[in-house]
Image (spheres, rainbow, N blue to C red):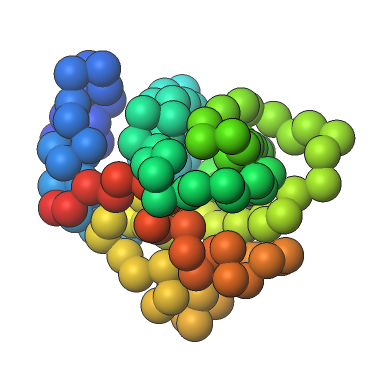
Length: 156
């Protein structure tokens, strides 16, 4: 297990494709993901990379005229604080920023690190995570249901 954590820590995320990342996440157990999440520096690197890729994986044609501020809250564990990112979709573009703005989100998603990584890597169904109460949401439920259409989600 330590070898898998070391392997993740040594990754050059700039060179890892979304599909490779999805395969890596698929091969990790919940316990291994928890260990990654407990390492504050590694967790920060992984979250920054995932959110950084959202702009590139955005599908403007699918979003059409959608305008929405989506707030993502990834709950901390192992002494780490919650992390908040926001995705703003407007005029066929997607902008991602770390932190909470004063804007009123149309949708807020709250989940732990393991569920977040599984969701964004295509290794978990958003509907299943919601039904199991692993993802909490506030706001526009229809937007939440359609969210995966607006991004190129990798397949492991």
